[in-house]
Length: 450
Ligand code: ADP
Image 1 (cartoon, helix red, strand yellow):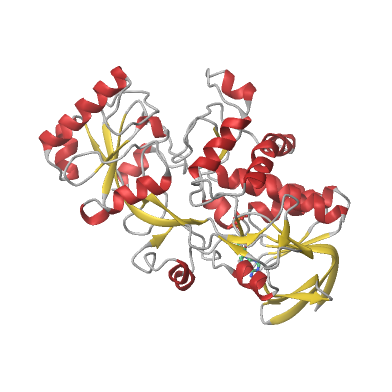
Image 2 (cartoon, rainbow, N blue to C red):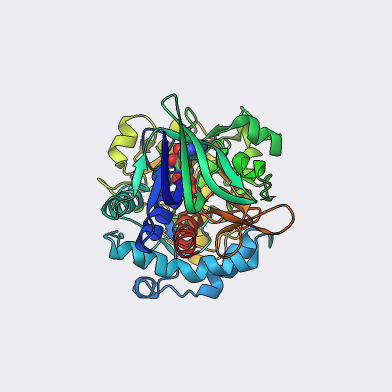
């Protein structure tokens, strides 16, 4: 089978779909291929929060913010290891990218909040559950613009002629498919946290002992295909784990809580051990050091009133009924259900409630909102889980892929988790969706215009 288009997009997650839509808006013909039988990748399984400085929405809640602050949080949050130019591009183009999606029908929930690891209340969430709002809106738009989507079609190799990427060799249900790209190829295959061998190659601590939040498609294919055409790789050993894994499956689902300002991490001894509003790497490393690398997330009914849902569209009643979250009418009863020392636990909560009053917390939690004092109380068991790979293909501000000698590889673009060098050593919670829609859009626009 042979096909041809101006633009070939590899990967049908958020970055690939954003790129396909943006290229098609510029008048390019586009073929998008996805190796799994469904679109969405890790994007659709994520909590779906994205960080954007959005004054009209933040001002309603009295939140002060600026693009410079988003820049600083992102740069410092990644230990100053991210490329400042790419971070600038990210934070400056995030707002127009989100408005672009809203124009296409993405609806946001009213509340602006702080998703775990975001460091500041600039996280927005769509009304559709998880990341499904982004995928639904982009897929609808792609179809409307005539993007041809080939499912169960896996890219195997880039075709390169005279140093230029001119197409892709793929397999589809046993057939070889040759896809010719007149203008260029956009790699949007996501990360590699679901590929245990690859994880261990770059970070030996993150082997099969760790589960993952990832889609089975997140196996680093785009990084391997890029390497084969001499693309430069950056930050491959920076792999983010979250302290939010389901003990059975590693999944992010199944816990009660919403805003980092309003939940506590409690270890097996009944103590806190870290700021719950801190960096993801700090929180996860803190958890790894606790007994059995295990904790409960504790909230009260102010965070999870009857009938309320978590970020994963699960009601508090369902979580309790399925046994994933414990419920109790008093803190003492909750401690017993959690199997932690009652005195330690009640003392921990009393101390925290005091900190909410004084504004001074022993773990320097800078976002303190409500006390934990309204029954019923809830606790959800959690373990570390491999989540996001910060490393990948080096790109420039135009989303062009850079080779090992520092030169642009003509015809080759990349966006999303497959790229490296933006988030440094630690990606802020909520910055991934921002990244994929912002750079996906840039990649699509630039490839179409070249
Ligand atoms: P991002 O957040 O960067 O968009 P996602 O994980 O959401 O990343 O999406 C990446 C998509 O790419 C997934 O749907 C995944 O199945 C798909 N994919 C991964 N490898 C290939 C490949 N070799 N060929 C086609 N699609 C791929």
